[in-house]
Length: 402
Ligand code: NIG
Ligand code: FE
Image 1 (cartoon, rainbow, N blue to C red):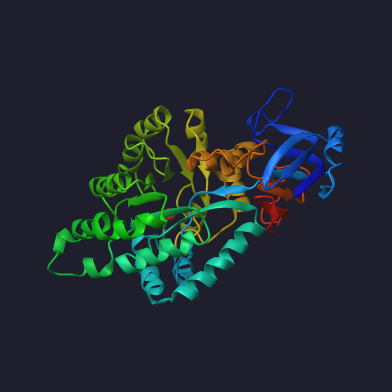
Image 2 (cartoon, rainbow, N blue to C red; image 1 turned 180 degrees about the horizontal axis):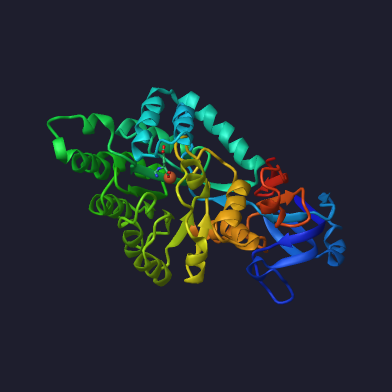
């Protein structure tokens, strides 16, 4: 099955090569792309496309002079959960601060929801992601916090993505915190469960381990125990760090060779230097600061230091209930010091780097045909027209999904 997309006004390849412009976006104007069996097989200028159109059965798509970009790679979501926290959001907009403890109310709603209810909700979110141009997405557990429920969440997530993260170390669950026999030892006792029976049950469904290293969640020492146990079980490491304060999450992530450390809102000079010296991607989550009224992370400072930056939605019912990468791009450009080109790169190639993937995030021969046709002549419109649905079509592995 072949598809030839022609008359592309601006093709963002993320594959810089001689004769292309747009810096690392590797832009080709008046371009065409050929897809064979779910993979990109040829990329070139419109004038050379005719030679590729002859094979019988090739479906022709006229892009009408619009822009074609790689599908978004959203490397941080928490999409398996019950209920929502609209009232908490409304209270926050009236002045209440964001606290990690809100996670526990979603844990109660998630435990009460059946598999089919969670599965149906997840299917709705996947449709939402595709409609907004996301073709690769990671999903974390973290709203189960018991062996049975965490296993359920990673298993359900695995039904819709290969990029599943076990986040048993999200917060200490209520039944541990309120157990008078545990007292100050509640978090350590819960970590014993996470690195033991819970990890054994969840690791077969997961590719990654994660820990929320933050005041109100887990200390760097507790996070280290979890991450090292996950790595020993064969999982790659990701970390939630420096969301609510400087803490030690970023430096722990770099030390452990994590693929990504996410949030990075409060960074010391030593954190930035560690990121610049290591190969851990800094994943920024603009939806969180938007929805919690925290200060935005300083992407410019990280880029100036040579750090690889990714953008992700962090879609979850508490701190960021958006699944829209175009929204994240618009905020990153408006409020975090990124250019439209940097924000698009961070949402596609940057995301691929944060998942240590080379098959997504770029449009080049051999890559997966994950493509987004915009209802716009250039990628700049993603930030220039905030809130406007600009995704005309989305292909994943060469199949139309929206
Ligand atoms: O990434 N930071 C920790 N976890 C989520 C918040 C989840 C919630 O508030 O329910 C986050 O922001
Ligand atoms: Fe998160």
